[in-house]
Image (cartoon, rainbow, N blue to C red; front, side, top):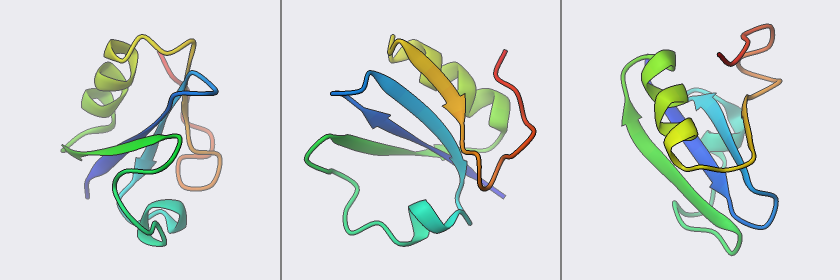
Length: 72
């Protein structure tokens, strides 16, 4: 299992997803008009650490694929 982070610049949000998540699987490209997908994380903690390093105001986990997982 792997994890990805979607970084959204206009909303200043970094969201952690599982690679199996429908939002990631159905993406059109890794770069979007509003941000980008960052891949290559083996653990949720590694993905969350990267999300924090983006310095976005909000760091969260996906409410679909990581429901119930809290960000530390």
